[in-house]
Each structure stands twice: as structure tokens, then as C-alpha cells.
Amino acid sequence: MVAPAALRPVAVLAAAALLAFAGAGCGDGDSLVEVQLKEETKKQTVLGFPAVATKNTTRIGGEDPLADAAGAASAVYPGVTRGSRPGAVTLVDSGDWRAAIAAAVLTAPPLRAPILLTDGEDLPNATSTALDSLRPTGARALRGAQAVEVGGTRAPDKLRARRVGGKDAFTLAAAIDALATDIRGRPSQNILIVSREDPSFAMPAAAWAAKSGDPVLFTERGELPPATRRAIRGHERPGIYVLGPPDVVSERVERQLRGLGRVRRIAGRGPVENAVAFARYANATFGWGLRDPGHGMVVANTERTLDAAAGAILSASGKYGPLLLVEDADVLPRSLESFLQDIQPGYRFDPVRGVYNHAWVMGDESAVSVELQARIDELSEIVRIRDEDL
Image 1 (cartoon, rainbow, N blue to C red):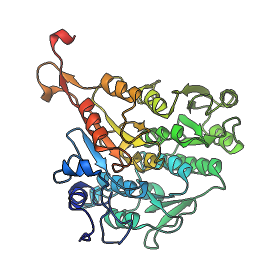
Image 2 (image 1 turned 90 degrees about the vertical axis):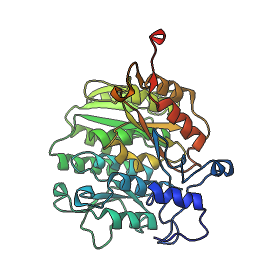
Image 3 (image 1 turned 90 degrees about the horizontal axis):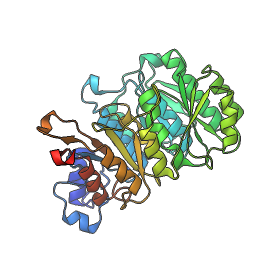
Image 4 (image 1 turned 180 degrees about the vertical axis):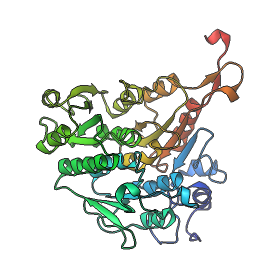
């Protein structure tokens, strides 16, 4: 692969080192798209580092979520051996964030299908390049299909595909849930209810759906839609977890849900606090329950909703972990900083015997700056605990 001369050398090295598909193809099919770096950052960058990775962080450095989805899929499925290729991929229209978040449940076992993003029926270069590398083998759970077409997407003719559709966000999410139930052979015991209207509060649901196989269903703020109600009934009184405060999903909806299962609400004041609350939460088999060190996590910007779906496969494999959010590319929110401090690894005698945290960072520097990445790395580092600290 030859990069055009117009690309900045550091960015090309960064992409070539680790992010070939995260930076692939929003222009020429054979080109790499640069990892966007500030001028002062470029001066401090050697062979793409620390923009590509630090000792405790790895960046999926696409300029947009389409590139991030391709990069995350390629990180999990290198495609160089048959065992490193997925059985299937899920194609979702980049114009429909709701479909993308609902489709995250298909990245859970047994399918483990990474999400790739399209422009309607068209495949952008990043997605096409990733498909050529991933070469899905065909999923037994899909009767040999190599792709799931969600909504208005179309797989290349060379791939066997299975379609799932719906007339709106509620029916499409219900149809995705039905497909996931068919794949697993039984309905899940838990479901997530999120806002159709506020994507930043819905984003963390994608990571959990990917890890657990619990579906994401949508509601209006003040009324539970009939399609969502019918889908919940199919789970036979499941645990129902409402993600977001009452001004996002109202108490009226919560009351309506109580007739369908056991209802609990997970909420924070804002999107960042909401994501942290979900990362901390645990009830029986539901929830991340991150209250100690030794975990993975994924960090995304609330302005890039589709990065929640793009990074879902990272929460479904490798260093499993929740989606955490920032609202400003240069600022570590106080609630997130406090959370990272609470779960920072420590050791008393030998760090080799310790546990470690790792963070995937979604997007280029316009989403998460290198300075912010470095701070996340610092708070993820294993540190010595002295007797006087106990």
C-alpha cells in the first residue's frame, strides 16, 4: 500500500504502525488518511507515538466513526489466518445512530460480528478495505451468511447476507433483538431501555450489549412505544434496566415498564456521569461492576455517537470493558478522573504479580487529544502502594 505524498509523514507512520484500517479510505482507495494531530503534538511525536499508543492506551485513530469502525474490526480480527477472521460482519447505515447502537448486540457471543458503517447502500473505502481484509468466513448461527444488513444497507454481491429491517427505530431495534434471540436460541434475561432522542445517554448501552448479549431497545421520553412493549414481552418478564435520568427517560415510562418485568434505573446527571454510573453498576449477572483495578475500557467523545457502535467489538473481546465518555477533546471530566483514580492498579512488592488497566481511545485528536490520552494513561498505570498509604 502506497500513501500519497500529501500525507504527513508522522501520520503515515502512525497509521502504518497500528491503524492501517482506522485510517483507511475516506479518499483514494489505496490511501491512508492521516491521524489528525495538533502542530505542537506533531513536534513531540516519534514514529507515531504517543498518538498511536502509550503503555496503557491504544488509539483507534480514524478521522470519523466509519474509519474507527474499520480500525476496531481489524484490531480484533487481523484477518491474516482463518482463525483471525470473523464469521460475519454487521453493516449499518452511518446515518442511523439508533440502528448502530441496537446492532451492537450482534457483536456478542456467539456471533461476534463487528460493526462496519456504510453510506446508505454504498460502501465507503474504509469499510470496503476492511471487508477485503476481514474476509468473513460465514457464520453457522446465520446459516452460512457472511453479513447482516441492517436497515437500508447492502452487502457486496460476493457476500451471502441476511437482512433485518424495521420502519422506525423501535421496530428495527425489536427486529435486531429477535435476530439475536434466534441466534442464541433463547431470549436474554435482561434488556436495556434507552432514549430515542438523546444519543449521548444511550451510547454506553452499546458496550454492554456487545459484552453480554442483552439487547438495546428504545423509548420516547414520556411514552413507551408499542413495538418496544411487544419486544419486552417476548423476554418473559426480564430484568429491565433504564439508562439515563428521568429527564431523559421519564418516570411515566418507568411505571409502564413495571408491568413487563423488574425495573431498575442507572443514571448520572450528565452523559459523562451516566457512563461512569453504568461502569460502576452491578446487580447479579447484570452490569460491569468496576470497583477495583484490572480492567479494559473504551473512551469516546459524546460528539461522535457512532463511535459507541464502532468500538463495541472492543468491549466484546480482548480487554472487555465499558464505554466511558468525554465531552471535550482536551478535558478529562472530574467524574471520569475520580473513577479512574478509584480503579487505578497498585502493587506492594512486585508489579509483575499485579493487575493492569487498559484503555482504547476512539478517534483522532479532534475527538480525544494526545494530552488527554496521556492523562488517561497516567491514571491507568500500576503504581506502588507503600505501607503509609494503607
